[in-house]
Every structure is written in structure tokens, then in C-alpha cells.
Length: 81
Length: 148
Image (cartoon, rainbow over the protein chains, first blue to last red):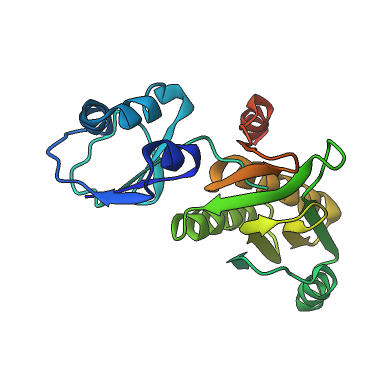
């Protein structure tokens, strides 16, 4: 599964994308796996209310299932316009 | 309907003219342009705009398609830049064309409200004195979606 990070999430983790082998059932499970990896992940995912998630380029929720998903992206609330 | 996510500047006059000429029978054309402001005179060196290639185009297309349908638009245009922009540079524009001005105005506001909070762009202010700040999303921007 490809995981993408944008804006300060990317800066805090230190990379824009990576490939991860995971059997996480939901986004929240995946976040738990990432948090357990290293301090920089724990710092980036400290407050989920400050984050948004997209599954295969569609905005989604942290309790959404990951079955069949190829691309997960984590980022702060968007600021276009 | 046209969506363009680009790094290059755009010609506001040429884009507006071409859009209006393409919808000559519509009656009402509204355009809105967003500009990099420097609220703290001289404090801002640049604005860096990051986006999510692929998702950005999809999100903007979905937002514009919804506006086309809800306000029976003759046409809609969204141009949004990314990369590093100086104060005073144009970030984005939307244009809407409808039979009557109310629909054109409302649809343009809808496009703006949605692309602010639902299109994957992130702005970072590069400060003249050194350092930088990610622009935080405002609750008011999220609240603005509720009226639609």
C-alpha cells in the first residue's frame, strides 16, 4: 500500500510517500501501526482531530476499512482558494 | 467546464474574455480571482502552495460538476496555481456563466467555499524575516459549507 503525506505531516515524518506492508483493517489500525514505529510518526499522528485522510484520492474517515485500498494519504485540513 | 491545476501564471483578462466568448448566450458571467495578500506589510516573502496531484483535479472536477448541475450553469472554469508565489500574484480564479446573475454569483461562491476546504491544497507562508508558517484552516471556512 502506498502512503502519502502532505504539508506539515510530510515535514514531521520527513518523507512525501512510502510503501508499507500492512494487514491493518481500518485507517485507525494503520495509524496505530505507524505511531508505534518511531517518534516522528507518533508526533505526526498525535492528534487525529488535526488530520484528514483520503483513500484512493477520496476524502474518508479514520474508521473506514482499508480492504482493496491502494493509496492512503494523510494531511492537515485543506487551505485552498 | 474546464479545470486547470498549474504552476504557471495565468492571464486573467485573456481567460475571462475566452470564457465569456464561449458562453455568449448565457447572459451572466461572474469571475472571482484570489490574490496572495501581504496583510502584515512587507512581512510575507512568498506563499508556497502544495497540492495532491491526481486528487486535486478529481476534487475540483466533482465540485464544479455539482455547481454546473445545481445552478444550471452554461459553463464553469477553475484555475488554481501551486508552487511558490510572490505577494500580489494571482493564486486562482473561478468563472461561472448562467442565464441569470443570481445563479452565476451563487455558483461562484459555492465553488470558492468548496475549493477552500475540500480541494487538497495547503498554503505555507514564507516570512521575510526568516521562518515559515503553514496556514491553518479556519472554522469559518468549514462552517461556510453548511449553507449549501
